[in-house]
Image (cartoon, rainbow, N blue to C red; front, top):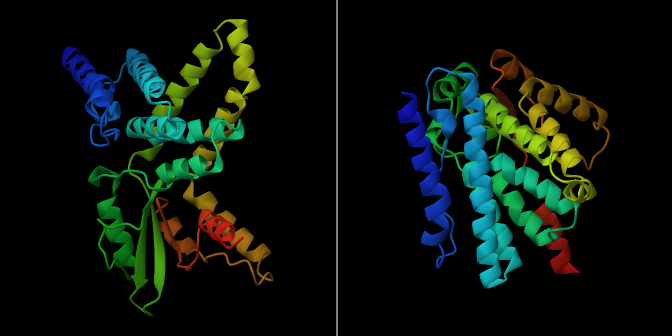
Length: 294
């Protein structure tokens, strides 16, 4: 059993890390479908599994970084290099893109345009049927009399933590938003964070000259700060309470509109948030319009 598991991991790693950059050398489109998910291969847990997963992660990280650096030396196109790097990291786990974005943007290694492009990865994370809590979604919609006009296969957004649907209250025909936590997201995040923490530990063992460079870019601080924020995003009960508190604090401000959340839904199922649908624009879109008019 262990031999078969190891062979499957090595096979998927070889396909993802070694073949993908050369197959897509001319199209310059890194593969999205060849995604390696070690957490989907199940067998009795053992202590060595953590280090085996970390070894696979480390090999993937080094291979992606070196192969894309080699392509950058050939083409000398920095935005393309960042885009391909982020795309391949996203195919492993979008958490790595989010951390990469935080470190790069805070240290002025990327411009605003590239940062907005990276935000696109975290705002439109690839999803699959295995991410959807179908039974729970149907149960919540039936209990609170909500209709999904486009069905559960057509969300309007998919983030790293959750998948978002537009629904309609049958009682009054008003639109609402259903925010659903991805299935098994806590365990998947825990594994990814564990890999990152082990990676940071090995970085701390590097020579003093490299440690000085790492401290200059505040890599440790930025990563730990973002990990804490991401962990908090998995608690929908806290998110609903924060929405209600901010809505109350801003009730007299006409230019601030906070959607009203149905606390009863989250109390019934902590993997869901149902809130008022508000038509609006993203901050990035407002910024683009401001620049075009100026």
